[in-house]
Length: 210
Image 1: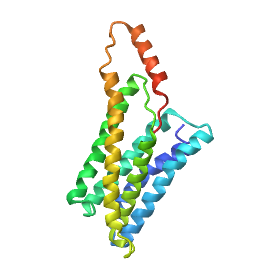
Image 2: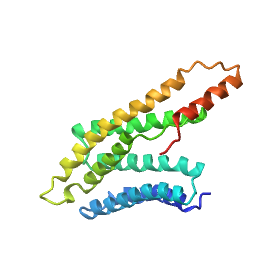
Image 3: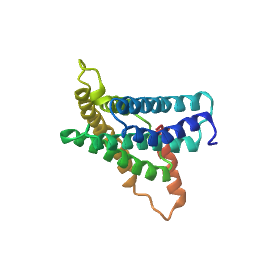
Image 4: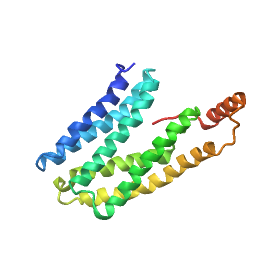
């Protein structure tokens, strides 16, 4: 049900995106800190919705669909606004493009593998990538409003490059699994054999997590 607490938290992450975008149009430093606060709260809901869904036994197909969509919308919208305000530019645009392209690639592979009833477990490196990416974006949102002794922008830009490296590695993992099923030679005229291959794929790949 959409009214379960985990699903409502996920939906709140999507609804926070217009407020986050609007915050970038305010005057600095209010703009920086308000956008940072919204982004941080949205990131916390990303942790809570999965935890509550598991602990309350309220995991659902809707939640599994909404959670990665909400994450990708939040990250993509924030990165585009950071480009708009000039905190991502020059060489830093390269890791940003890598991150966005990886999100599109993974979304396409997930959709394809879902049709085969194949799920891909999230690796530890993928979790590191997400953590590094969120931290880097947080530093870039604060930007010039940060504390003078701390090189906030430099930390954010370095974090984007590190996140991009993790992104390439995890993107390759997803692509490798996807290509293995894309190139699988399964006769289309034999539905029994096809269903058997799909069932074996599900058992071998484990459960998915956004």
